Amino acid sequence: MKREHKEEMKRRTRNICLLVAYDGTDYHGFQRQTPPVVAVQNVLEEALSRVFGDAVELAAAGRTDAGVHAAGQVVNFFTDGTIPVERVPRAVNSLLPPDIVVRRAFEADRDFSALHSAREKTYCYRILTGETPNPFCCRYAWHIRQPLDTTAMEMAMTDLLGTHDFSSFRAAGGAPMSPVRTMKCAECKRDGRELVLIFAADGFLYHMVRNIVGTLADVGRGTISSEDFASILAAKDRQRASATAPACGLCLVRVDYDAAWYELPEESVLKSAIDVS
Figure 1 (cartoon, helix red, strand yellow):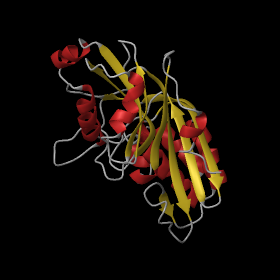
Figure 2: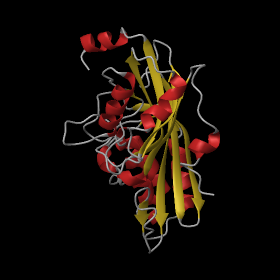
Figure 3: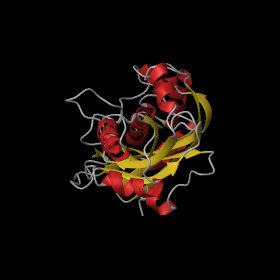
Figure 4: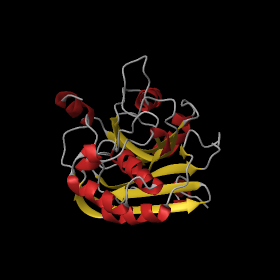
């Protein structure tokens, strides 16, 4: 958005924040695309414009890629529309397809930005192991036929914790920014055939989680060791890491902010995205 256009939007009377969930399978990512290509933002902005009575342009916490899902995406926009905030979810959801849902709406502070105000983001990645695929999981998990050594994967994941240069897991084509991030959580949960990898950090680079997962899968297969994984991270060289994991297994679980008015739903609502019990 051009600077002049952004300032025009900010002159509107309200800053609305939404908590959004979507199945990204049938969309070309979150970020708005030129028709006939359709992204989540295209569909959501059209519905919001109808409800609020003015053109809506969203800012989002994360630009999820094609095929990536979200349980806790956060967006904000400026509007002169007068609909009470508590009525927004029902009104907008009545105009949305079933694979996009507004979970909650807030009246945000004027200076709030879903992208720039974010303090921490959490993603999860699901892997289903075993010879036989599960048709009920194929949209939401990467199927790997061979068994994975989760102990070795967990050992490798400890090297991700803390502040590092994550250039080895950064794909080309993303926005120019520092490759240094602080990983606050990197853990593995398993229940039978299903494996869920959880990552929380102050920010993520383009394809960072999927590149980490692709490399961890090779650790689980025994192709590389947990010690090799540490060397790959330290190398700051994308060529040293493994292939990018498929988009279908990735989900943006939650985004945290330091804002008194921002409250996530009960933990169980967003926890369902990573629960393997």
